[in-house]
Amino acid sequence: MASPGARGAASPGARGAASPGARGAASPGARGAANPAARREAAAAARLATAGAICYAGERGSLAFNGGVLVLCVAALGLRSTYELGSLAARLFWIAWLACALALQVLIAVAARTEGFSLVWCALGGFLGRECAALSATPPPGAAFWVVSALAGLAALAAILYYARTDGALVTLAHVSALGVGAGAGAAAAAELTAAYVGCGCVGGAAVAATPAVHAWRRCRAAAAARRKVYSEHDHVVAVLEHELLNTRERAASMRHRADHAADGVRRDVLSAEVARLERRESEIAGLAQSAARTPPSPPRGGRASPARTFSPAWRADPSEAGADADLNC
Image 1 (spheres, rainbow, N blue to C red):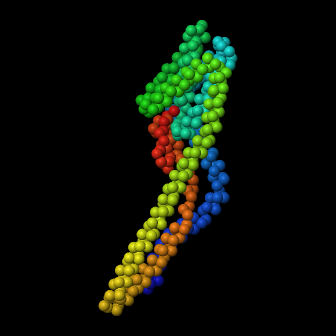
Image 2 (cartoon, rainbow, N blue to C red; image 1 turned 180 degrees about the vertical axis):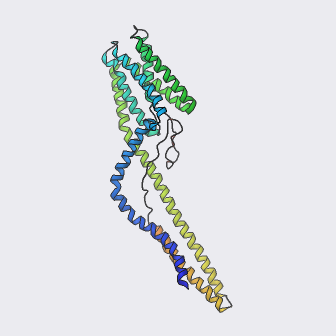
Image 3 (cartoon, helix red, strand yellow; image 1 turned 90 degrees about the vertical axis):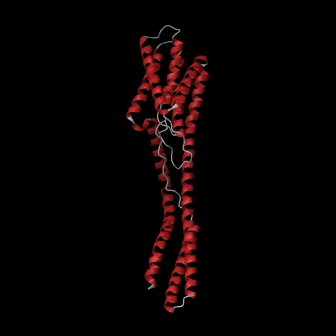
């Protein structure tokens, strides 16, 4: 009579206890063997995610809008380079500035989890504005340059106003700051060209070198948060088993007291059988609790934070990272 009850009582607990242990014992080895491949896959996925974030995750409207502004700025500066006003190095400095702005944009995308390349055309737009102001005092380089520059200026202004309306003051501040930095780079190039080239190289090189380190730091934060979550779940399982053990002990003590004071022999036998069943259950739960307490929690299987959306508050950071970063459309 006790056997079915014992099986019914023991089976769920045994299955619930045995399977985490078995998984905990087997999965670390499997994960350890697959770890290098998993790391390579995660790194490739992270590179693809960063490239996708820079390109607005393939969103055609944003890509065409911002890409058009960037193309107009590049076309105007390219036309400026064809006119023999100043040395060739001075006329081509905008290419070095473009490379530096791209490196900074990638670093910001990784560090702040932003999306887009609007800071690049803002930086070029500021540089172009300073060039237009400087060229206005010289013989005009040609109508095509001024037409394309005017179109680039109007497109940049429309884009900044659009993002100011949709994404708020922080995005506008970032765009205006990039315009100011671009104008400052143009002024620095006009004052001391060699120092401007060296500064661009140093800033761009530092951004390129810092990007992998920042990405690794963010992944470590996410992994640490995931480990904390796993440990908290493990501690919860141990606490639940210990609570059930205490409840079972209290029920067994109550049944034992009732069996000792039962007047009817049949009633005493029934209560004694129930006490025996609860004692077996108590022993099983105690074993499960001790086993769970000794077994370290399994490390997380890994996974990547989903990319933030834009340099606007849309690309939400990884939920495992406490205090999610501000997401902006830059």
